[in-house]
Image (cartoon, rainbow, N blue to C red; front, side):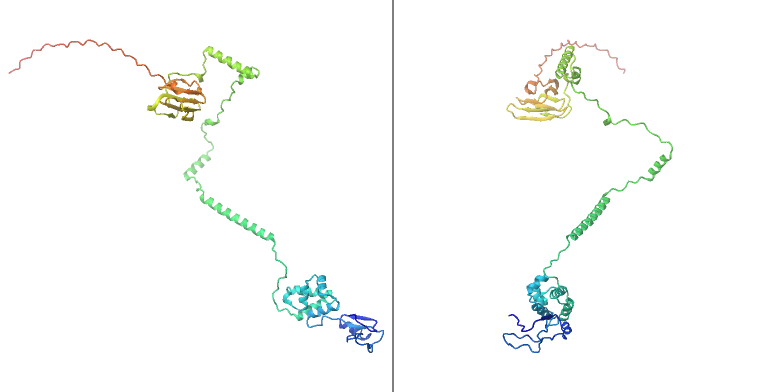
Length: 397
């Protein structure tokens, strides 16, 4: 409802009693409520027509506590609690709790004092006076500060990382020291020369002349091997580098050597040479042997199969190793290189394998024919000679 001021032309509002006292001599102070024109039509008594009327505003000293004083000042200015909350950025629930002095619903005391300062400043009141009134109305009893509502405590993650890194460094140092101690414990004791040996070394060192022995021969491993020559390289170089010409030259040279009676040492066979084991002899035992022995002069493979395809022996033979064939019929020897296998029959060298696949039965030498021995003539035996009896001398009596 609008306020009917009657015939009052000027209305001035003051904030506190000090301002009223300074202007009391200029205009009368109206402490009684202004009557409503709808209730009474009587004019205000003893009021000059042109004199201003001063209306006293609520101050921080009004009310039973600071909360009521702030609420009175807010309502006098026509402001709502929501307006104050939006202007001060304080929750509306905190504004209402502060006006009703429900301090248990507010944050800690420092935050509450900050809210009172902001509230008083918004209303145009003295913030420090408002704080003093609050401390007088709610004295501090020395209680512990409470954590602010809605604030989450967070720790710096870098501190945890630094702490973990320090723990790792310390642990690594400890482990390294333990490992060094264990290694030093397991080490053999230091070799210390005897006193006699030390004296002998010092005596030799004190001499001005040092006797040197004869130089040692170079080790075998350090000797320089003969350079390898590629077969046919000389023929190819002599014939202009042509492969066909090199082959033709090698063939012609082989034919010339054959006509001259020159035989390659690798192809020579000393027939009749006795068998000499140069390595392991595998296969059948001497009692069950068929008399055929295959000996490898170089590394090669040997597979012995039966007539039905069953494998009796399969092995990569090294140089000098031999295989003694059993008496089983129908065995076939398959080799990687027939030229490197010497064939022995009944302990004598008979030649080399003719092909990569050879029947062992063909290599068995025929039994030797018996040799007839002529009887020796017997000389006639002589007649035994008869000796004449010898006369005996008479015995003396």
